[in-house]
Amino acid sequence: MRISVFGLGYVGAVSLGCLARDGHDVIGVDIDPTKLDLLRRGQSPVIEAGMQELIANAMGARGAKVTSDTAAAVRGSEISFLCVGTPPRPNGSQDLSAMERLCIQLGEAMREKTEFHVFVVRSTVMPGTVEDMVRSAIEEHSGKRLGTDFGLCFQPEFMREGSSIRDYDRPPMTVVGGDSERSVETVRKVFGHLPCPFHVTTIRIAETLKYFCNIFHALKITFANEVGRICQSLRVDPHQVMDLLCKDTQLNVSAAYLKPGFAFGGSCLPKDLKALTYMARLNDVDLPMLQAILPSNRLHVEHAVETILGARERSVGMIGLAFKTGTDDLRESPLVTMAESLLGKGIHLRIFDPEVNVSRLIGANRRYIEEVIPHIGSIMIDSCEKLIADSKVVVVGLKTPELVAALQKNLRDEHTVLDLVNLPDRAKLRGRYVGCCW
Image (tube, rainbow, N blue to C red; front, side, top):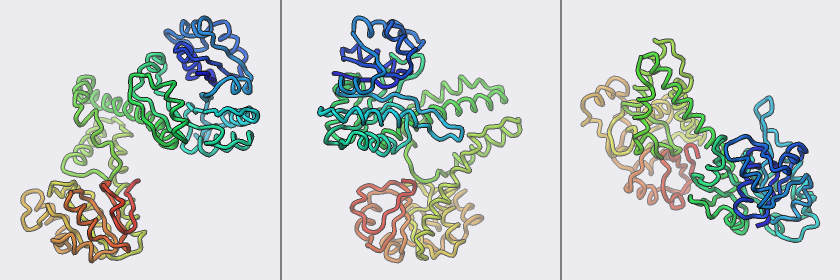
């Protein structure tokens, strides 16, 4: 294909070299004359293993060209990759001035072009940037319209500095958020051959994904370093601990628990977090990330309570009391915490949980009821249908097929439903639906 690459920094230079190597007709565009001179001489502006040879081949045998002429590059290509910098401002916001200037130039370049053109943003930008700023700038300065005269996509890159060529050739996945099938298929022609899944989504989801991929990497590094520091204070080898932790690909290094939902609870997670952070304090080890987990967890409960109170109804029914589906364990259950808070606010509350029978509780569960929430038994009822009929707001904290069927059958239009568990088939639910954090 005929491709133009705007911005020949790290991502742009690697893209130019790899696209030319793969047989595309590539034009690189930048405003830095020093960088352009380097590339014209076949020298890489990026110092990394393999880059010098890649660029020398691209600018030599493969015939790639570089220019500062935006209009010429747009006229000479059918798809453009936007790789300009988006640095932070002092207040942490994103400086999009380079992207905005480029989009104005791209719009002006499109004025005289009759061929459909696809613009693919690869710079990391805040969600909404492509559909709002990029689209409006190109439309305003070209007189053309998205979908008719040009297409827009966002394609996050997953390249690490130091191994960019290898990562370009073997990414974990290719993700394209596009305005139309036509735009996405144009990008597929360029990257569809890569040995990885090709995922199509919306532009905003693709923009958001890139941020949270990077933030997740930062989270993992911070977690491992805090593990290292507490282990160091305990004279435990953190490398062996983390090596073994990573061998669990069923729960630890997996998609398990990585779903937006309600707060965690139970007899293990809160207790162990409290014990570990207490031990860290005894050893004068500051663990900011681990110490923030329980306060963050409490915020999810408070958010749910505020959502319920915001419905301005006094009659509330809760489906679920145990800390998760399939158990009667009430210890550290966020649903119990929510119930206590609602009762304290004067809410008329009823609770149904098919697994929890107060009269049959034994051991630690019974002691917890007797010592912490002795009055819970008086507000529990034994019928989901009756709970729904007697409530204006229905809070769903369990997700079994039977409960989902009861909700679909018995909810009415006047109900407000607060979903804490990501219910399936939401279109079959009557009433006003509210997700806990979605």
